[in-house]
Image 1 (cartoon, rainbow, N blue to C red):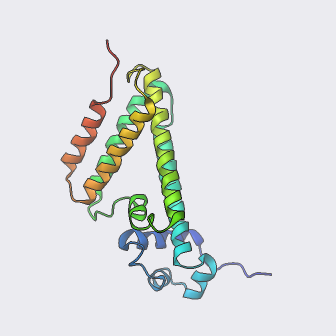
Image 2: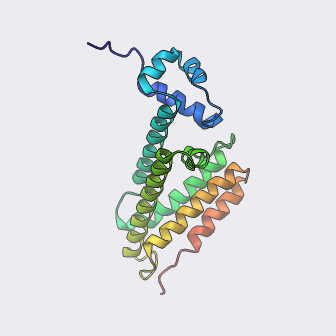
Image 3: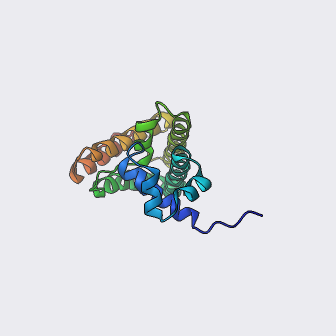
Amino acid sequence: MARPRKFDEQQVLDTARERFWSGGYAATRMEDIAEATGLGKGSLYGAFGGKQELFHRVFDDYCGSVVDAVSRQLRGNDADAYARLSAHVHAVAAATAADTAHRGCLLAKGAAELAEHDETVAKRARAAIEALQALLEGDIAACQRNGDIAADADPGKLAALVLAVLRGIEALGKAGAGEETLTDIARTALAVLPRPAH
């Protein structure tokens, strides 16, 4: 019978995520993660496989948590859909401005570094982006049903536009754009959404 593992798997994944997030994939060594977690390299390899497998696990967990968080933020009735959309867009700007270390989003960072060469990362990033766009599209459709966004606009195209703006906010924040700039972008993005004619 296999011996039970003597460590908290989630704690190890959280520590590995911090290392990959701060240093990037290429610059993070398994030795660093072993040292940070207090595990022997043998235990780390035995539990998670090599560095690539460990990153895939971390990246998958992160993408899932991002989609879950956005789902919670955008879920609700039609009457509050626009308020939820506005709050979400402003929350991304505020969180980006608060990221003084300019680490950015691990989804964007991992995809930028690895998607070209790692099909697993590319597929997971694509799935996460598609899920985020679908959540935005659902909320925008709810805004339309409630009369807050023009009914004749394509909710899928508007969702893609909003998602591109949010990803752009994160990229600009990583490059050092200040809170005022990011907040102005968020406000402008919401202002250009087509409103119903009265």
